[in-house]
Figure 1: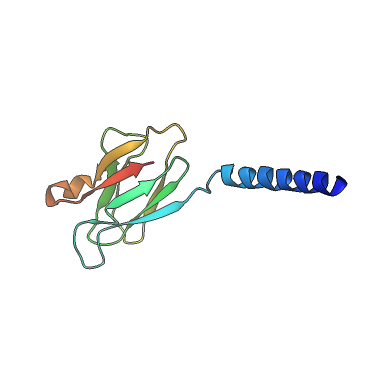
Figure 2: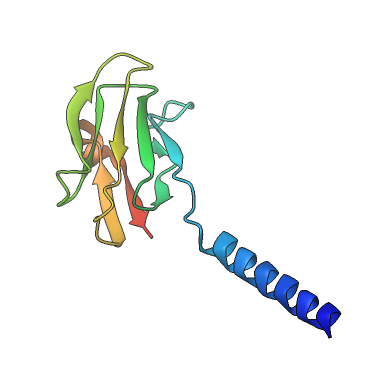
Length: 122
């Protein structure tokens, strides 16, 4: 009887530990986005970004600046300052209270050339 009780206690502890591990929040990620493709195209690389609240996006001026990153209707996520020098960067942290959904982002000087993308907050 004592062996059965010990076994049940061990099973219960194992279950509680596994639930606790599965409920732990995911670690925040840092996502790097190049502004201007390596091949010289006016584009963001990647142009489709998936992020979660707490994640950070690092926008890196790569080629053919000046560039910036404006997220439509989301001033907290936008970087309106133009970056001129290759390698310059800035970061955007996705706030914890950011509404989930899909947002268009673009480079103001090159939007007419198609330099835009999608940010999906999940």
